[in-house]
Structure formats: structure tokens, C-alpha cells
Amino acid sequence: MDTTIDLSLAHRPDLSDRRVVIVGGTGSVGEGVVRAWLAAGAEAIVPSRTQGRVDQFTGVLGEAATDKLHFVVGDYTSFDAAQELAEQIEAECGPVTDVVASIGGWWMGKNLWEISQAEWDRYFVGLTTAHVAQVRAWIPRLPEHGSYQLILGGSATQPVPGSSIINMEQAALLMMRQVLSAEAGDQRRVTAAVLGPVKTRLRHWVESEWVSADEVGLLTTGVAADPTASATDYELSTTAQMIAQLRGLGVYPQEGGEAK
Ligand SMILES: NC(=O)c1ccc[n+]([C@@H]2O[C@H](COP(=O)([O-])OP(=O)(O)OC[C@H]3O[C@@H](n4cnc5c(N)ncnc54)[C@H](OP(=O)(O)O)[C@@H]3O)[C@@H](O)[C@H]2O)c1
Image 1 (cartoon, rainbow, N blue to C red):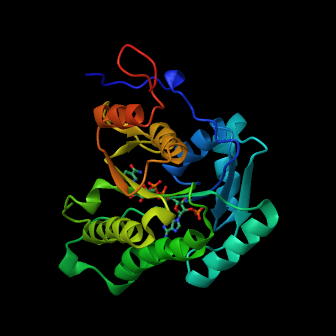
Image 2 (cartoon, helix red, strand yellow):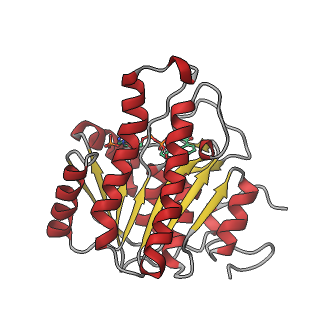
């Protein structure tokens, strides 16, 4: 079984007719998602709460930051703010076909019975509200052939002692994916990538079998390009799982051969 991924072999789909909003695109996983959509020819729009974060991120992207990448600075984490930003983005850039929501915020350090109200509000209420705000703003606007993709972590299903708030937040969002698919039926394609630890530029050490942010990005482009990819949670804790899913989506060569 293959356990390494050579992204120079990837069969990147042509998404030049797509316009994606990558919420949390300035983050450590979002960075790989932004790069992958730009490499697939899509127009990518990244909302960010602060100009400072945009400036820092543009420096990180370097030459990958083509003229197809746009930033919109402003709050997007409340219902009203997300609606206003969606209206602004469509007015300035045109109709959006896809959304990837990779909104971050890791927390750990206390047992559940020791957490403060402020920690609960920030990491459960704040992050789930930011996600639901994107759903309200974007699901009604997306075309049937588009996609709404959540980037989540294995803490949605595996308890991590000391990180209960994130466990509960991620579990709620995984159920949000499922109920959204049940409610939207064939009208919208909603998926989640449920990741183990990710190789990102911010990690001081990584394990070889972890998936990388760029691989997650390639997966999201494969989901967007495959009209049958819908109502699915992609479990991606290891490179071997990532290879299997990338092959299933036809964006990575089969063992000893071509992509499907
Ligand atoms: N990093 C990993 O190893 C890893 C592993 C498994 C799963 N995941 C999942 O991947 C998703 C993204 O994680 P990440 O590590 O890329 O996150 P991150 O780097 O901490 O943040 C991603 C972006 O989210 C935006 N954001 C909006 N509200 C936020 C808030 N209240 N707190 C922090 N950030 C906020 C920020 O964008 P602006 O400041 O530009 O607005 C930030 O750049 C999460 O669902 C996470 O569970 C990550």
C-alpha cells in the first residue's frame, strides 16, 4: 500500500469556471486549500477579519498569490456580518459556486468541569456560530453543481482529554454537515473532511503518516469537480486514507497507473 503522496503527480481538475469562497483561508489548513484552488484555475476569495492577517498570508503564499486571489477584510462570524459579506462578495466578484469552511481555533488545557464561561463562549459558541453564519449566508446562493465543504478534525468523533470544548464544537459541526445534507437533498452538495493532525507550516514536528494541508486542498478540488461527491464525511487521519480518497475522486494516479 502506498504511504507517500507526490503532489507533482496530481491530476488537478480544471476549475477555471468556478468561484470559491474559502472561509478561514488564511489559516494553517486553509493555506493549502487556497493554493489548490488557485492551481486548479479557480477564482478564490478569502474573507479575513483583519488586514494584518491578509498581509501576513500574502507573504506566505508568495508566487502562488495570482490575480485570481481576492481578499475581503471584515467580520464574517455573526449571522448579519456573514450575510453582508456574502452580498458584498457577489456584488464585487460575481456568483459564487463553492464554499470551503476551514474556520479554526484550537483550545486545550482543562477538564470540562473547570472551563470558564469565556472559554465556552469563545470556542463553542463563537466557532459554531461562525460556521452556521456561513451556512445561512451561502447555502441559498450556491448552484446545485457547486459544493459546500467543511474542514473538521478527528476530535469530532474521538474524545481528547483536556480539549472538551473543541470535541463538542467539532461534533456539532459534523452533525451540521449531516443534517444539512438531509435537509438539502439533491439541491446542494455538502461534504466534510475529517482530518487527523495535519502537516502545516506552523508545526514544529510532524509524523510522516499525517496528511498535509496541500493534500487537503487537492481533496477539496476533487470533491468540487466530482458531481457525485455529496453527503460524505471523508475520514483522513493517515496518508494511506488520503491516497485512497484522492484516487476515488480521480485526482491522484491509481497504483502503477493513471487517475480514473
Ligand atoms: N491544524 C490542524 O492540524 C488541524 C487538524 C485537524 C483538523 N483541523 C481542522 O481544520 C479547520 C481549520 O483549522 P486550522 O488549524 O487551519 O485553524 P487556524 O489556523 O487556527 O484558523 C483558521 C482561520 O479561521 C479564522 N477564524 C475565524 N474565527 C476564528 C476564531 N474565533 N478563532 C480562530 N480563527 C478564527 C481565521 O481567519 P481570519 O483571522 O483571517 O479571519 C483563521 O486564519 C478546523 O475545523 C480544525 O478543526 C485542523
